[in-house]
Length: 612
Image (cartoon, rainbow, N blue to C red; front, side, top):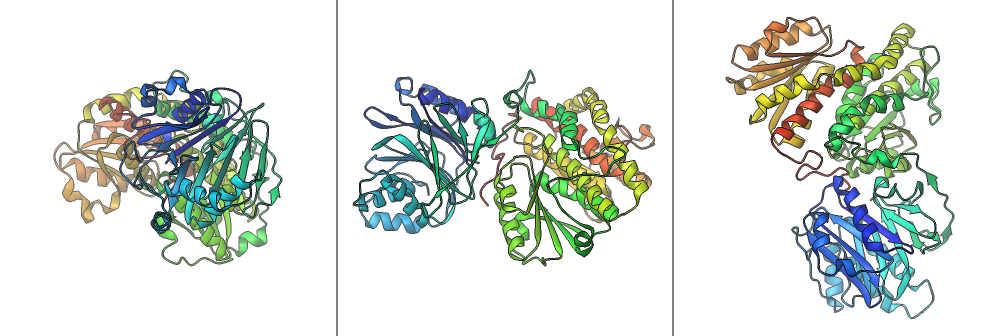
């Protein structure tokens, strides 16, 4: 969603701010802007459209301020326009603010401020914030160094909803205040300078030492210091966290697009996710977890809750938990889960998956489960993200920064980590050792098999050239292959804008087959040897109705039946989603390239969905 950057130091702020915004473009946005403190007061430069448009604004090159805030907006309140772009100032031009999130009671606050003489110039919820800060600032008769901080604290006390906020004040040109609630914000510590961002990769080239803000905490930044306060303005201690990501991993490294780079990074991401958790002869280890056999034996249900691609990873995990651990496992969409009063109690383990760790629906569902007494476990790719701080336990995929909006390496790493987690549970529960040991061997071989699968890209590219102009494409699969069909269909929709649907292959004759007509493309996945004959039979049903067929398989099938067959390496059925999705990721990528689309930043989508 929206992206936030801030800088306070001894360098010109504007180039650093714009560079940070460029690194946040993958989040999705419709406008951008920066605000700096100049010799004559606050300056704001903003416009709708891409970050690069800022370079054309009159006076942008004349900015010399060394403290500033910046923002990319994804419209929620008010259409994309210059006046609705951030930053926003109060009427007196004393305070400048950028904000990520939703102020749910902004209409009420807007009416209150209007009654007190304030005028509004945008349609945004954000504009109430600087005016509310100004209201409390002018009401405060004290003139000590905490006056600015008290005004921010009092204003935030009135806000309902979610926010990550940066605020600068022309009367305090050497400090910046930031705070957050249910929206991401990190502070990067430098030498005589400090950085702020909604995502670590945006400022990773400047520092690897980060402060992680918790909900309702406030931070006062100078060039040399960062002071932290709770929402009662009590001083609180905080240590930095060192992030080991390589800044170069957030660049394209010679690939045409981030998505293609990240598809090819999957063997490495899987190796990193496996890490030192086990080898073929030792038991699986999670230092972050302290689960025991009595606790796992007491669980009567596992809920896996997530959104979008992460939910599809959860569907693959359901299969592993039920077959390895013999625990009933349900997978639910986070945005639906919390509104149907789910049957969750102390005998339920709730697992939440989020690549960014900031997915609003998923975090809200996690909080609900904690209230109901369930143990909560977060799976994320981002250390210190909101979801990992809310959960009782957290484990990480270690996929490295994923910049493209459409998730690829994060998805396969999630499937891998869930599978390893199921092995960990199964070993504690003393389940079938032979099945577990064979699965471990297959996991150790998986990165090489991924490398083999990536070599199939030319066949996929050729098929893409024949199908990129189609309006409808269907995906079929049975069992665990049906979960891959869902993810393949989602990828195609996300970046090619082609309408696609996925179906359990056995459901085809119960309605969807009415949509099959001459020359329509149907893509099928066949990796479960128990379901080969059934799936092939379903594919024959569409062939007889004139469909073109692409089959992705590692089974012994008659390839002459299908228009194109892509043979992927043989592996354990539990792991097949990690291999079979790769051709579908590449298919979506090449389709979008043939159509001349922006692969990394598809329309209307954002990387981190921080509003419900």
